[in-house]
Length: 73
Image (cartoon, rainbow, N blue to C red):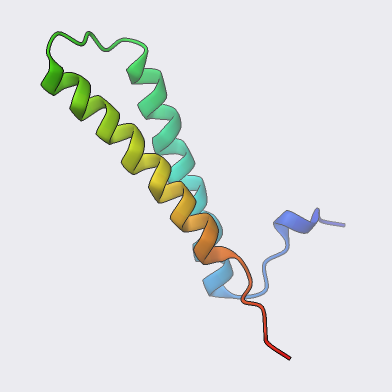
């Protein structure tokens, strides 16, 4: 039997899970490259901080959008 996180019931669910995987791969790549970054100016620091903020925000947005909607009773 498959684990619960591997159960896919629709194409939209598959696209959502695939999107999460792609974003996580991009985030891992970003953090691997961040270890090698030499920050020499305030502008470089600002760009680096913005890249972390935007990538974290995209992960948060994906998590919020993929949550099941609660029905009001």
